Amino acid sequence: MSSSGTYSLMVHGGAGALDNVKDDKTAFRYLDSIRTVLEHGRQVMELGGSALQAVEACAMLLEDDPVFNAGCGSVLNENGKVELDAAIMDGRDLAAGAVAAVDNIANPVQLARLVMTESEHVMLIAEGAMRFADHCGMERVPEDYFYTPDRVEQLRMARLRHKVMLDHDDSEIDSEDQKYGTIGAVARDSQGNLAAATSTGGIVNKRMGRVGDSPIVGAGVYADNETCAVSATGFGEDFMRSVIAKTISDFMLMQGMDGIKASAAGIEYFKRKVNGRGGVIVIDNAGNCAGDFTTKKMIHGWIEKGGQAYCRF
Ligand code: ASP
Image (tube, rainbow, N blue to C red; front, side, top):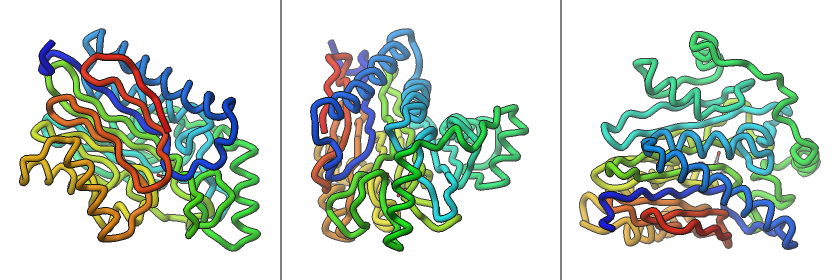
């Protein structure tokens, strides 16, 4: 089958050392979730859904799964609260929507999509984003919806150490032994349209008001039908400084690379310029899938050109 008539889909559930995945049962828990999400995305695409619909549906499922640092199960900030960031982008016309520092919203990616489709803006933050959610009739969920015992314990450890920490490992920010549990999805549908979505709780014990890369177009998320769709996970400040998602797209646009080469070149740049910690998933305009990272591992999975689903760390 020619690639123009097929769909491709990739999702991630965070990058890092993943030293917390010490046994088969834990590994299975992550990979099983990734596989379920991929198969759900496959259904969306096979029923004629667009890349945009597929990435939103996949991101929402990942947000709903408490093992990932997005939606339910998000990490807590310095005040013991969740502040969620998310973005979605449509490669057809570079339309984008993003929210930052929101709470009480179960699926921030859905709110990001409403910002894209129902407002004249690209990003809304904090109280303004919440008012927009009310305006759109989105349900507010109670604060305790987001809390898991692991996250409360993780914040306690971070406070004891007076450290900012990433996701649910107990190691410190400068350590290699981190897991950055943001979630993301990228897709190319059978019409050749690309889309990307990223959603996160950010980093543990972060300052109130801190915004990472995930909702920033060109840093943690990007999609352009002419090139590729990208979603990132890792230390947000590194991605923001290297504008990595757009950099990968530019490698395709300006140097004629395919997505596989552009992803590798982007991650090499990320490492060389800012000693970046994290990874990306990329689908290019021909449906090729690529996943590259500087951390020891990245939880991710893919369906390339309508084929079998693969999941790995
Ligand atoms: N990139 C996210 C942030 O810095 C964290 C993550 O990927 O887990 O907010």
